[in-house]
Image (cartoon, rainbow, N blue to C red; front, side, top):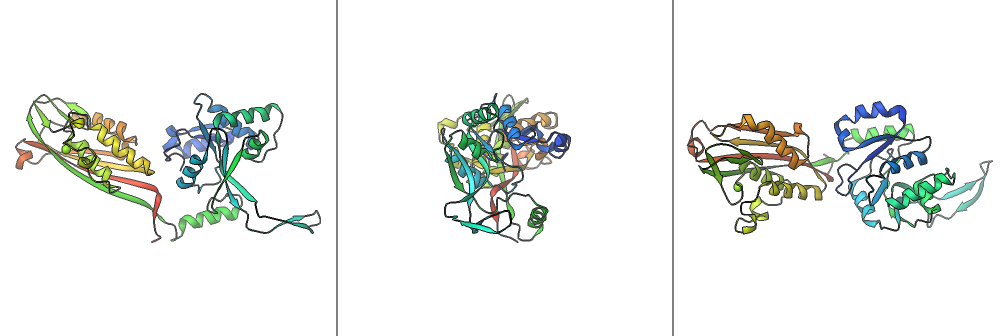
Length: 359
Ligand code: MG
């Protein structure tokens, strides 16, 4: 959830040193997108280690989260993020609904605690980075090591804290029964399906005499060129349409009207990056793209690896999620006569905060 949230740029996982190799193994797919560091003997020491690691990056804000709350969602992260100010922190918390009893050592009730304004603290607890770093440093230097959460430490340091109401879904996995409940949650038919969407795109551009065609953002030498309003990169135009289609956002012509001279001769990479930005703004993640070029010439295979890498730079997804193929038209039709090149693209995007009802 944190990795795919648009406002979060850096993720630091603080772990027990004994778990370092295990964590590197199970997180190998995403190891380039987060940093794993060793924590200390207490929760407070571990958080301080994570904050110190971030000193070179110096983010504006930091969200501190317990890994045992795996059901945090994008909507909650966005709400917290927007509630942050440069002078105060925010924590997720849930109103206490049960009646609370103060009990003595003999298990006898001493009195009933009014719960009108009581909240149970959760995480993330989020702060202006410089303030919470200073607070942890001050606590360390003062020998204060008994804070049960970062909000308590911030309160001690006089950082104003504000509660954002959470939900019971942000549970803390503590007891064995919680693990069983979590397993059950993932197994049950009640588990909602993630919103996986597929879009396709198709484009054609005319070939004329020239000095090379641009495909997937790469200039490929040959004795022809593709003509169009932009650089006529037929592959990227089809890909842009496929990406836009996953959120019903129309086609490339709606976003970049050919009549607008602003887009004359531009590199089509900007169209793809625009579609990717729209997807990220809606918390989407591109699962894979598949492009088929239909062309008698030029030969694609010598450039396929570089073209795939070019696509990776635009899409920021792993290479195994990018498929690029080429076929001829068996000399049939306008493609067979080398009058044009066509491209077909398919894209699959997972929109994390949107779910279908249970099936
Ligand atoms: Mg086009």
